[in-house]
Image (cartoon, rainbow, N blue to C red):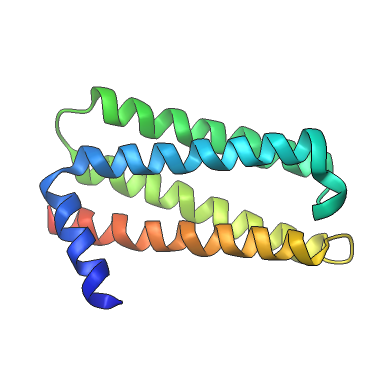
Amino acid sequence: MNRALEKWTNQFVKKPKTLFLMDSIGAFLTALILFAVLRNFNHYFGMPKTILTLLLAIAVCLCMYSAACFLLLKEKWPLYIRIISFANLLYCVLTVILLFIYYEQLTALGLIYFLGETAIILLLVYIELRAATKF
């Protein structure tokens, strides 16, 4: 596993724009899923709609930031990668806090989704920070 992460990190060091693209696509998928859940399947997950709206708004902002970095950034990659890593980390912390707060209302599917999403984002944060230190 560590070898694969190292290989990915090295690829992103060579093409840092790809890291922003991957982050943007991930945030877009998160926003899309949250929007679909918010509109149609909230009862299967148990998270209140206001909280899903908050998470959706954050995901959209992260998507726009990463997309802007992908499209516009020419230099200072490490700084901007650290910024998005920190923002992603804060999103994960917020999600875990919300899981504790709304634990009684969440379904098993809701727990699985939010914990899985958090794990994926934390993996991305790890790769981003490793790439930022290698630049």
